[in-house]
Image 1 (cartoon, rainbow, N blue to C red):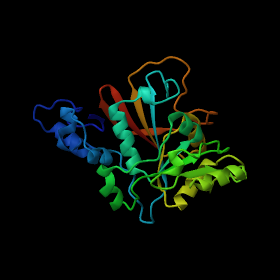
Image 2 (cartoon, helix red, strand yellow):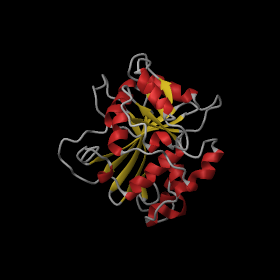
Image 3 (spheres, rainbow, N blue to C red):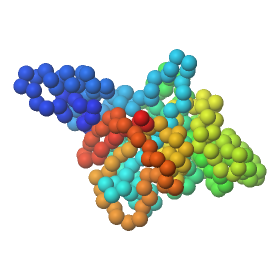
Image 4 (tube, rainbow, N blue to C red):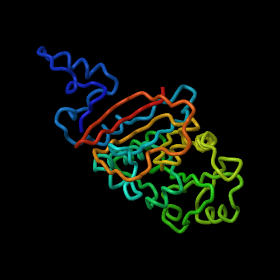
Length: 283
């Protein structure tokens, strides 16, 4: 893997004196990865990936919630192929996927994505165990499922055997029998809306009140569209897959358009085998 942005000694213009590239690497925020990863294209260590995707430092008054999304899209904008994201992913994309999960307190996902992708509980990763312990986190992030109708199979391992209880984010008017079924399966139901649906801003606040301030969403597109429309998304980690699929697959975010497009700024850009791993933050 190599870093394309911020500028490093590899991406900077050649310097006969051998100093300009080094200055660029040392002066840019998040410069070249340790050990010359930018130059030799080797696989980055878990520590290097964790440093590249670290959440913002906590303020003096404590951690504020920070919601990042992790999505993948092809060159022609498809977020899925045959309804799933795996066919347009790669080994490097999955390493970053695992790193982002390991850094998060909670993974927020839509019910349709749970059904389509066959979601399972997040697993403890031995490579991140000491880092999570130092950060005051449990062995694995919780999974929080956003659902209005609670139309979920509560006999699945996501609900019956997670390391930490799965959360259900729903509205106050959710069907009582489905709420009872979720709780019987071991899930914790969190009310984040006055009707049957979930209010994105209220969901973020509710998770923060439970101590989950490092938030990650993996979609799907409808949920991400709701988060964008509500203005609660702080960061987008987007993998651009060097594939063309055509067809009518969804984009990474769906739903009604926002009145004024949101502007995000590029934080970093990594590359491996033609896949681009971008990281944008709200301005």
